[in-house]
Length: 167
Image (cartoon, rainbow, N blue to C red):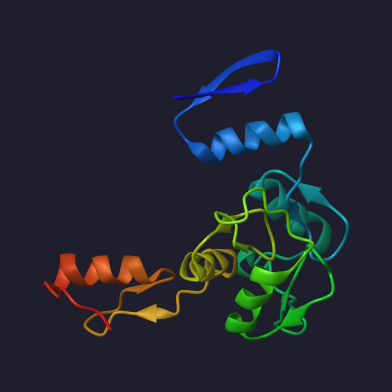
């Protein structure tokens, strides 16, 4: 269990789930990393953003919440200046955008264009972006399984089809 320590004040909040700890830290810092694509609403919780989009904007398809719905473009919500429809160009922007918070230069080499997620590996960022959009572009050649992450497809091939190499 992780215990949150805030300087001189001790907060005995603990959890085994790092997502819950992150949301708890946001309560103390006031950070609201999830932003509405239609207005200035921002929140800490994905469920709050989903509710907001449904109630205020009448958008019910949660896979489209993080896309520019009218143009099907990826937009950077950090700099608000970059839009592209190519995932490779977006990943490059996520490496170079100076508006993105990078607490650690190596661990946060790539930062998500929507939230504060950071990673050192472009493949991890692509999978993360696909989680926002709901896309699962990687398909198993032997069945109907699809995934956002290459590592999940490799694992599926090993477990379900006894296939130990993936190219």
